Amino acid sequence: MTTTVLLVDDHPVVRSGLRAVLDNGEAVQIVGEAATGEEAITLAAHLRPDVVLCDLRLGTGIDGIESTAALRALNPAPAVLILTTFDRDAEILGAIEAGAAGYLLKDVAPDVIIDGIQRAAAGDMVLAPDLASRVLRGMRNPLPRLTAREIDVLKLLATGSTNKEISRALFVTEATVKSHLNHIFTKLNVDSRSRAVHLAQQTGLI
Image (cartoon, rainbow, N blue to C red; front, side, top):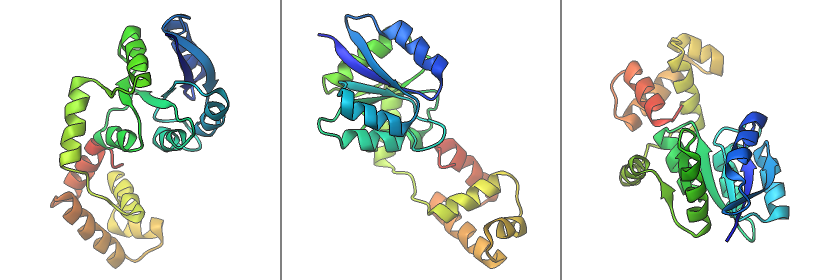
């Protein structure tokens, strides 16, 4: 049975390459392409593909995780398989929590993607063994929830900004910046700025 697929990637060359290696008319049939999350939702509602093969980063507009949640809310809802180059824990967990049927990296062989598409259409979870173990670990030990402002502070911290520079950039007092840093250190269970930045980058918080 042929599985119908909607490709979602903001790079035309990537979409063309995927169509060339996946659309064999037997196991997989590409029924449409979208460059943005918004376009993907509109096309999926119209084309009703079995599976949406979606990148995580989609340029401007909503990202792959937000797109996944919206696609899964459609009726009928397609299975969503993430195909990306990014493998940070926060992004993998975010995609799965949004309803993705699986998460594959772009360096896998075409037959692995085709197999993943068919398994996703059948309702199976599609994860490489190492990613599966990380998802399980992440669910057992969920990442801390930082506020949007704490994320802003962390991003500026990662650029090497001082408290004074952060306060100017965010239009808050230095005392407020120190308060945010204390909260960040507590939530991440770290005791220095460098460790906070390292952990945030490692886990995909920033």
